[in-house]
Image (cartoon, rainbow, N blue to C red; front, side, top):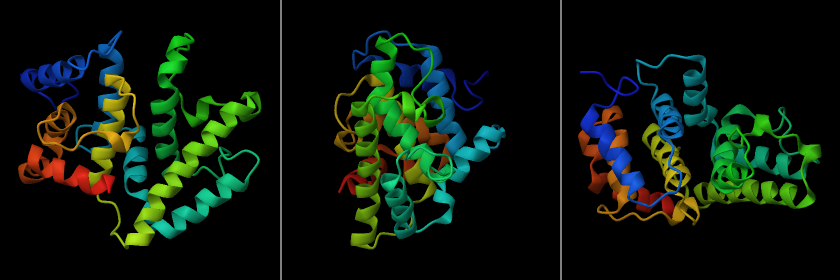
Length: 225
């Protein structure tokens, strides 16, 4: 049986599509959906995907073994700089998070403007942004810093690979379902469309006890707190 991305059988893939489409997203594009779903697969480090991009995503998902306090220092350096997206400041383990924010906040805008690319750090020239756009990016970076500050204040353990997968799945859902809220406003009910979607999307990459709707609902609720 042929599998989409070498992972999902037809029934699983059709269910993923149906859940996204049930949100009433306008101009749903299967090719875009597949490309974003591939990023989830690449975060997993699934054996069938062994590209350079996959290796990069695995590095991002592991946060380069940095503790939250070290990440906060890097984010503070970014915020203090004239151009926070400079390559020497926005390092590889933070770029994935900034890209997810850009995709969430600016994706629909760029699509309306007819741009052919998805908002990403390497597609942005800081000096060509308006002052308002620069302020938006700084706010995105502050959001990321608040997220890591919560780890420090609550003495949470390092983020696990499944957390990285769940975050990336949430980003995909935001992009494709045209969810209008922030990523941490996504529902954690095990019967919500998002949790149903995440359970199917992440099913191939972890034990069934960790990717059941009940388990992911609890995990997502913890990540929102």
